[in-house]
Image (cartoon, rainbow, N blue to C red; front, side, top):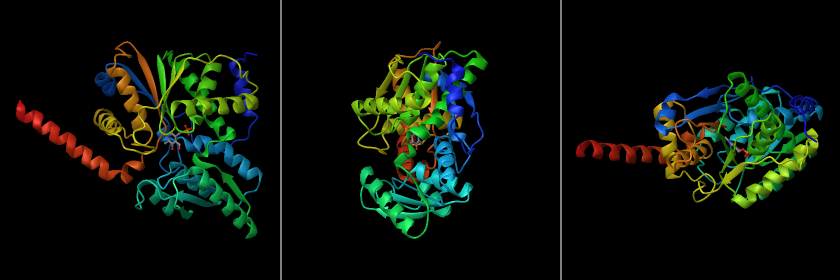
Length: 353
Ligand SMILES: Cc1ncc(COP(=O)(O)O)c(C=O)c1O
């Protein structure tokens, strides 16, 4: 059964939400990056959400934390990589609500006390390091920690790795409705929307909300870890849960959407040459910072499509900047090496002139 826009908004409103950020976030046209790309580029600035350096998580945590409050939790428990944005923002959200926070982190990726890890420690989370890069194993450790905390008289509230649950996806249903409002207010018709794809929470929730509001351009997800087939499985999983929660028709056609897995590099968190170039381009044209794990990879994919001729001067594409910027400090070695490489190349070009 098709739903009027107000119906999805009404269904969403039935879920309690703890306000963690001011919305709407800006939707900006980027004139200098557009000139360089040869197509009109818009950026949804979810890197500017409130809470310790922003990103996608405040929107997602608003719904989880309402639940945590209802359950009278005393401590939030979650897990992730050593440079987890989710650990940073869960810690910040816990402190905002006057709760404690414990995070179980893997010893993969950059581990020095920098970037996200530094912020987690500064905000006083109880950090447990585990020797694994396997996220399932991290989850088991976190659940065991919950048992220990219960035995000590705490009431832990567990949020899984990356914070994506059907409940937290509601945050990006709300973001999708917000984007649809912004497009409508400006009478702006987009040719494509680019988003990161980690667990697929952002991607799937935006897809559902935008389609309900009649925004029918291709939604393009750039995977940062899983292969394309796995990403499609995730879309189905989140879609069926969200359709049930919001009384939407799961069988409704929501194409076109596309998922690309060729910009991941060797593994999750690999600072690819394309992502590093994308970071330099955005920073050098607009003074906007991207990160090597999420937004740099999305922009790398978008730039690749521009170079391949998919988007031309009269097209308008929007990218969702989901944050993650503190990672640039953890990746300072790769970034400074890349800067040196590119400035040497620039010097050589200058010498040849
Ligand atoms: C900055 C940033 N962007 C995007 C994502 C991925 O979002 P999703 O898991 O909903 O695909 C994450 C997840 O950890 C993130 O930290």
